[in-house]
Length: 85
Image (tube, rainbow, N blue to C red; front, side):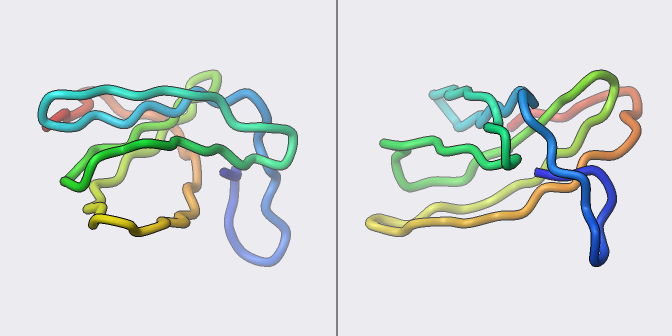
């Protein structure tokens, strides 16, 4: 997880990361390298949101059985009205 893309992103430690599914929710925080791990998620479609001191990002993703997913999130100035599945 970072602020600013391109060649020199600033990695964010302590960002709150939440995954919302149809019937589940799981959360964690990013580590000192901006990385986070959520385990034991069932296959399905999720909304992942990350927040850090007024910065926000969200993305929908689908997880398939036995799949390991790696995603890169870039935090930006947050707008009003977040959507959840």
